[in-house]
Image (tube, rainbow, N blue to C red):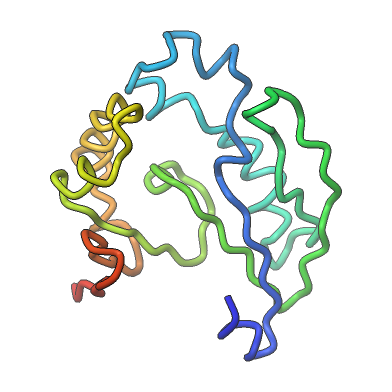
Length: 161
């Protein structure tokens, strides 16, 4: 983010994890259902309404950087933040491509299934089928503007089309 700031662009980082749906909806099919994780955990409408639409050049510029605190299962109650006309909103998160969200530019961090399995904590291995489904159905490496091979975070590599 510092290189962008050095070029006079203000940056607001937003995490998709702050736009999860309430636990009663996320866990409707159990706490470890990979299809639910893939399809139902993220509040896509809230993310578009509170972040992406207002950040659009035609939007209000008033962005809500967090909607839901998944740990407390309550609204995060943060204040809106004004993004200047030349500002940039960086959204991070998993399984975001292929959902018709209005992104201007996308970067996909691509990991082989073996690397993803190694780097995923054992307690979260139940999510791996969701990532396999994402790779098969969305094909994020073909959708993203830039693809970075991320099997070794110490040595990322941009994949040329």
